[in-house]
Image 1: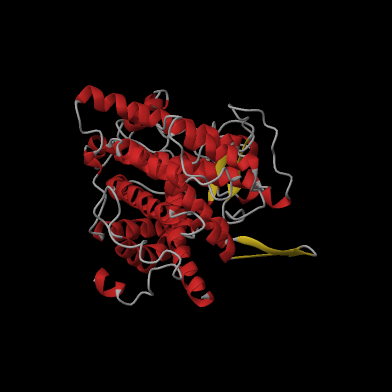
Image 2: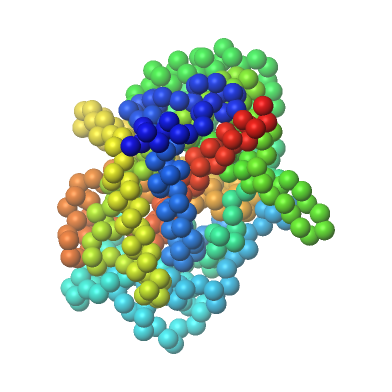
Length: 456
């Protein structure tokens, strides 16, 4: 069926810019670009977009005031569109701001004497009815240090600097934040955290200051990359895919005009060309976009794997509005059903499959590198860019946590919580919104194809 729909799609060369290169099977997996386009744009994107608009997923608690741990905080953006507007306490659903350590209890339903300020300091939660024994188990688990499972540096949601943000009112888009401060963030990510020796030169970001012809350096870089083990190649492609996805969002929601208090946002084809045109990027554009598709497959696989966690009857996405919560759960299950029907998932079993000690060491190195990247997000000078960078990094980190917790997920009890594997509301919101951003990127990429075709 997917192949039949493919025949109806416009020609996949981005207005001739990528010729026929953005097509066919992706590296390190057995899925092709065309099948992902059809599956995402026709089946998954409409549902995931609707899901991220639900109350449970639109409110995200984040600390945007954490200092950069790597260099002085001297590049905060003064552009008004960089600003993030926190959500007033009165707008937060009571079930989200009144969650407590007993993550599955209905105690939040009866909280009435707490002030808004006190309620806001407690984490949002998944809700259900449990025995006292199960409740005690959660109290014990809350004290358990599970940092070894995390791929991200987690925000302290109880910090007075942490605030709820309505993601729908603070959309990801181009704010004007650019230049050396932005390059420093991405260069730190690529140069220091992608298993790359300094003797190997990465092809330049086309927006960075030119250092001359880097064709030879580019070929040397990819010779080196292909010589790495699968796990380290995957790591680079995940980061490159995330970078590509963010760039597509910025190009699709670009500040086109500003005057008299009214800003006009929309697609900027020229900015898209700078980042992905084959000639401008010396062939890098196609690689970057394929890495986006690869990242999409990784997070899609994580959602496939974690479906049993949410499909248990006692799991609810609790906001305090039972009708809304029921509709949100039903929509999430529909998303899982669509994902289950996709035939070409990434096989993560090929990763960390070598000698036991070596695989364990490599997995830990992989985790620490990614965790370091999550800390770099606190160095982003633009508050809105920092918000979405932290959320999408947290989403990917949660996806990795899921992929490397297969046994724990397989052993989940059907009618009670599990000590072996659990997700916080913070992780759940980041996971779904992070994947939603990737799904949106692929949908926006199709729109750019049409725009470039019309401009030829």
